[in-house]
Image 1 (spheres, helix red, strand yellow):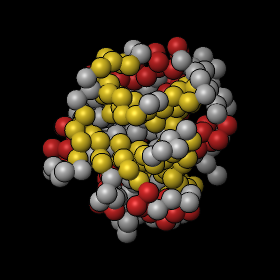
Image 2: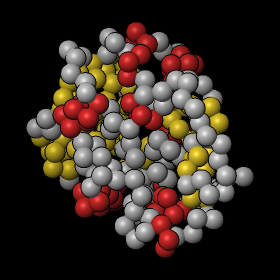
Image 3: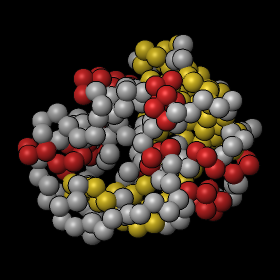
Length: 258
């Protein structure tokens, strides 16, 4: 089993009010504090299959210029999603499965580039995206996984977990490998600092379920050696490269954007 980052944007930022203000309000946090931002999605190479988790921003989407009031800026375009995939040594035709954490276009933007892949997502997200082709597999979450009450095994060592809140059909992916648990979580948090601080971002569809999900995520991390793989911060690929195990009682010093 091998997990790789599919990197498309770098050198962005988000402010604390955006990343922390979901429950208490943006006005209660310091918008002048900024954390590093980027965009990357993830690829799982099982040895037998190539599985993508999310497919990035749509190719050619206009990216507005940021200013000091911008809550989140994803950064500079490195390459399109397909180009980033090819830079890792894979082609569109190599992908057998795609696991979609949620409907937002920075996660679902390039689904159409993979007509031969089976695309797994919750029924709710499939309906929101109006997807019903033969390659769309709606996940029923027919089992549990650790402390998560609803889950489904995709292949050996890869689990799709119901995690409602950010969207009403949101999911996360957990990969087991070498006694570690790799949590590819979509947007449960936007930056690792929010995970340590136990704060929700301002982007959610169901705040009560988002809180329940974050509580479950933190409980899982406390009880299992977890590498936390984020979409919107370079801490995701850095955690992956270093096999960094999250310790919620000992937050590392933040590196701030230049």
